[in-house]
Image 1: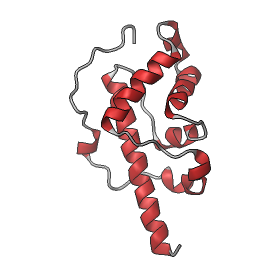
Image 2: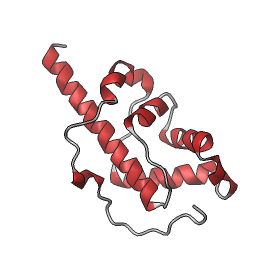
Image 3: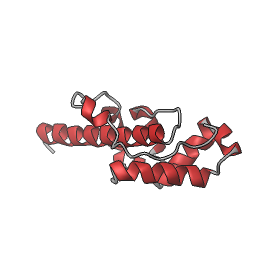
Amino acid sequence: MNPSQFDAHDSALDADIQAQLCAYNTAFDELGLRFRWDAHTLTSLAAIDGEQARIAAYIEAHHAHLLNAYSAEFLSRAILEKKNARYPACLATRVENAQHVNHATRPSQTTNRREHLSYGVELPALAGV
């Protein structure tokens, strides 16, 4: 690859990561969950195979109190369904993505306010959250 091809690939990866973050964070918000992911969190979870397993691992590690009311499977499925309604693409696993992690964690210059707006789908919030 020549330098311009690296830049184009990095820009596409940055855009994908920002779209993933927007979709996940919108899903959390729509479900009444009070946490947000950043690029570092998203790329660190990329080592885990499968999006639902990534979400469950995050909940188990950082929000285990939610498991008193809901199963990890239920929560991860609900989050993934909401996320996929906004952006169905899956972030590549770390093995596929390893050479680009440093580029993936820098802030994107192309993110705009419209990317952070939800679709306005009204669903009841999770009880007790």
